[in-house]
Structure formats: structure tokens, C-alpha cells
Amino acid sequence: MPPGFAHGFLVVSETEDFQYKRTVFYEKKYERAVHWTDQELEISWPLKSGEKPLTSHKDKYGKPFSSAAYYA
Image (cartoon, helix red, strand yellow):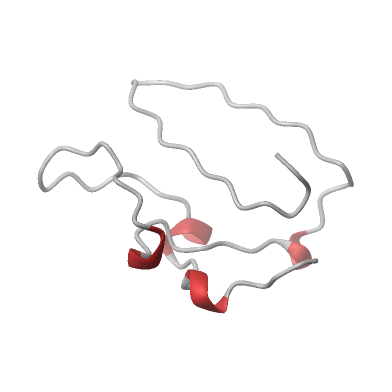
């Protein structure tokens, strides 16, 4: 995926190893999150009825997609 592109994943097994490569060194001040349930994105997460996934603090309090920073 290109730099600055939003991405996400859902682990459906008991454990998962996840690695990704960055184009620059990580700096928390530049980290952003779009809320994973944002209706504008229309993502059909494969969750069982009533199931609430374990999310990080960042993902739990992500912002609406409509207010996401845009990088040209």
C-alpha cells in the first residue's frame, strides 16, 4: 500500500503475528486512526452477532473518516 494509506486488519484466530514495513521511522505524533466502525466506509467486518472485538486504544477512539487528514 502507498505511504499514508489507511489500513486495518481483523484477527479471527486465537493468535496472530503481524509485521509490516515502513517507509520512514515511526513517530507517534504523526499517527492517525479512522474509527473501524465508521459508517461512511461501509466495511462488513466478519463478526458474530453481538461480538465485540478487542481493539487498541488508538482504534477504539479513532476519528470519523470525514475528518481524516488528507495527504496529496
